[in-house]
Structure formats: C-alpha cells, structure tokens
Length: 264
Image 1 (cartoon, rainbow, N blue to C red):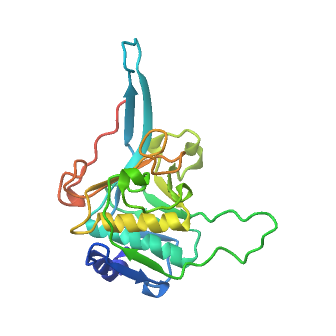
Image 2: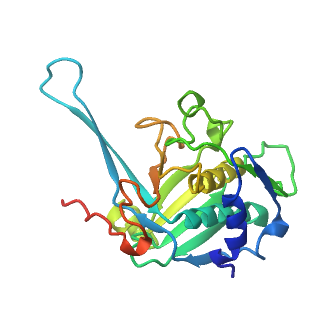
Image 3: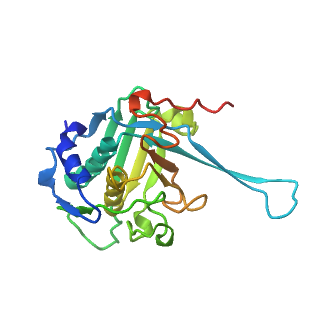
C-alpha cells in the first residue's frame, strides 16, 4: 500500500519549480506499486454544494427562470493538493484503469474519491495489445486561472487541446439502492473520469494551484451548459479551495467547518 506521504519529496520538488520551469517524472520516480485504495486524511470533500442561476429577462416578466447545478467542494492544504496530483500521475504510470482515495478526515462528507482513466474507443477491425502505457510526464509550472479548463480565450493558458479530454465528475453511492434516488445527502463517493491527457492535466492544475508563489486559492470546473465549459456536459461541478479563500476561511483542515445542509 502506498500512503500519500510517500510523495512528500516529489511534492517538494514540484513546489520548488519556477514559472515555466519543468520536471520530467517517470514510473521510477513513483513510490512502488499503486494500491487499489489508499487512505488519506489531507482532503475534505463537501457534497452539499449547489449553484443556483436565475434569469429574469431584459423586460418586465411575471416569472424567473431558475436552474440549479449540483456539485462538490474540495479542501486541502497546498501540499495535500500536490500529493493528490502526484497520485493521479501514479495512476497513469501504473497501467491501472482506476484507483481510489479513502478520505479519512472526520470532516469529509465523502468517504472516497475515485479516479478512472478512460481510453479512446478502438474502432471495429483494429487490434491492440491494450491501452498505451504512459512512460513519462513532463510538468512545467503555469499560471492558474479560476476556470482552468475553460475555452482558451477565457483562460489564456492552454491546458487541454481537446474538449474530449475535459474531466467528468460524478456523485457515487456505495449503497446501490441509493444511487437511483440521486440524493446527494447520501452520496459518499466522488468519481473523476478523464482520458490520460485529462488526468495529467488535472494533476498539473492541482499542483500549480498549490504552488507557493504562482498558485491561486480557488479553481472551479463548471459544465458547459450552466457555466464556463470546463467539464464534460453531464458532469457535476467541482470547486477546489486552499486556506485563505472565501470558502476555506481558516488556516488548517482541523479548523475547517462545513456549512449545514440546506433545509428542505
């Protein structure tokens, strides 16, 4: 089993990178075999997030159009997000299709974060010997925008070349009978799905967000129909917060308290 503390020295090397300075990582840099599920107390996920969007038009109307976009919020210290990013890269190097983090912090409303690598569909008639193996990843520190996977004219930093590589986030329920009710009060899993390029970009933006000099306190991933087009259309929203931000208003995870569930 690999605990995320095993990524500590790599996380320090990533944090020391200057803007546009790079580091090349290979499977040999990773701490042994990747476990199916790894316990981690450095990440708190709140599943109660809901963004409400209202539109009343430009004239006088007796109605207002209101949409709701569900999602989650993730909280960690800078080194925690760096280690999660390295864990995602470890997943790519491992050749595994998926891996999970057991979120053991007492404040977390989700108990697991799962990541799944989606490989392009092979057309009928073509034969392969399995998904291509990732043998190296070159990471360089880049500026982080609030919506890092949105269209290039909104972010000015290209992190994904194709919309197909944008991630999809989903709620999960460990008890099957609850999944069909879609009651987020009982959602105890968050699932991240993306292509290898999308997983690598997600790892990079988490590490850059946590950079001591060039990072930022908040990043958001919104679906294209109700936000800044940074996910797949069927994705829920995802927001990541560092200490000192509006949502993470204290200095440590131990001081963090989550808002009560909305009534009703």
